[in-house]
Image 1 (cartoon, rainbow, N blue to C red):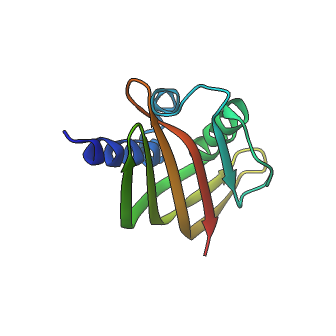
Image 2: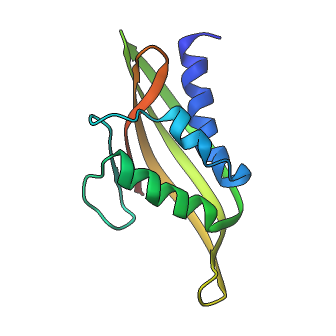
Length: 132
């Protein structure tokens, strides 16, 4: 598998967690490093570190049922041991709130950028997602 195929597999693995609920994969594909960061248009809007990002991702993926996604217009650029993937993401599912026993349909069209670092394998080092 070439580098671009490996990177695409990592991206798919990230979003497949919404279907499989295999939260361990988050630790396998993201750099557990002080250089890790993420931005999102989902609160809180500050720049997040690895620990905060993982906690929010786990809550998000566990709280969604009937999740599905589609990646479109994927562009991957390789720069030595760095790579940048930019794509459009369509997501939908049911947001479950077990505290108040409610369910809400969600759907989004998101601009997404993942930055990868190869040390020794490819890992996500930064991600930024924002709605259109």
